[in-house]
Image: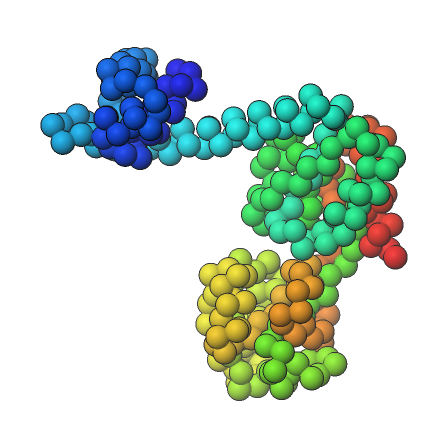
Length: 289
């Protein structure tokens, strides 16, 4: 199966009409039909059910097309990366992190690094929290983590970056926004949003508050949903400081608690590149300052 055949399958899956798909691909309808039949012969199952009205995806074909879309996206990314390298770069340092704000000084670090290593690209790759699979496969050179997530993983090394305290997020006109520090007692009678992919130590703090004072709470699906709910006057939330994006849209008030996040960078012990060590030193220096 080649890229032309992938395009034919995905276009027909989108339009479910042979004539329209062929027109969109600038090929004849018999050519489209032939290409799809060749693929179905190769893979051993039907992707489409044909009818006088057009085509519909079989259950197997629907799953197959989902995978094909992912493959096409990865292929496009690989081509773009290859084009970047062929034009300007001799090496690439990849860093996996959940959100841009987790390493807020990353753009500045990349700029400083480029002054010394102009031929080496630094590529951020965004993953969900607690998903180091691509790093463990060797597809990422640096992985942002915190606390003990990667402590016992063999052939890796943890390097300290910064400690992130816990903050209360409210609307800017909320009475709590005027506090210099917020305590558990200050949350009495309020509505606290919990869950939303919270790390274990934050969940523990949320449960401690719920069991200590009279407070309402409800589960929020994720951080963006939580922020939307705050603006809609549905509640307030506690969050690690590394979610702070400095937009000024919300009030961030330090929360009086012992819990914090020990944020680290995880690297492969067999990666001895001087450029990698230099890039990490730049990041550590930016945070120490």
